[in-house]
Image (cartoon, rainbow, N blue to C red; front, side, top):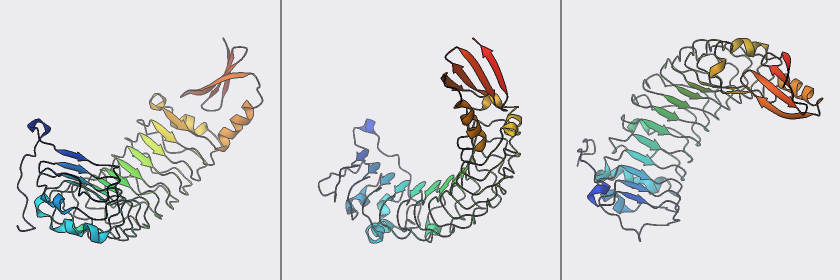
Length: 352
């Protein structure tokens, strides 16, 4: 059979036919599959958390196979090499090789219908080889490796999720052709500047734990719903006014001194600002004035503005309980009197 030929489409067996379609051998600590029966009707094989050092050749005969998980085994580059010639399972749609001992991207050219490819938690140093992966791919996971450059991804026009977190990347590049991309995960790298290469369709971006000093570069990503920028060196909130679909904004553990540019974020639900250097809540009150009812979380712990409140509260020995609402911190005393500290830092006193 020509390796470049498209596999024929056949309806896979179903459980209603009385034939087994799922083989789940996860966490069985198997060193090989010699004691395992492999019915030809199998559609999905899960071999997660075993001790396999080689692939059983009988897997290559499962012509109905759509999903193969070899996660958390002891497979190295030589061990997965047979995959490149397994023509009978060329209709495979999901291949998981996460958490093994590979040092390079395996040759999966033969899988012309591949949708999910996961090689995270290995020892891969380069994305070289991705150019041979099918352009049908929708999800690509290469996190927790040693990759230094984003490359050979230009043909993934259908890709929706790209996970490259925990690598050694310094530059965001070669993303411009990923016109269907919805989620981009680049946390724990060495990136200094945000560059989405013109992409406007992304809904989730994570750049946590990088070396960013500015938020600039996100202005055109108007579809964005979740933005994670914690643990960087960002000193100013900016470029947010156009991100009107944003629901989650995480800028915790940066160098912010003020809360800015959030007035247009009318769909915002979660705002994470903890571990910064914010001294006043006045700008927060103004910023969220038009959409307070949408907010479910505002996290401000370990900022100077909050430390001032905590110092104030320590003066009261008779506090019975504390409630935090969208509008205020409510203190209930043993005498049943109530003090509300408004979101702008203003005090009012009630008696109940």
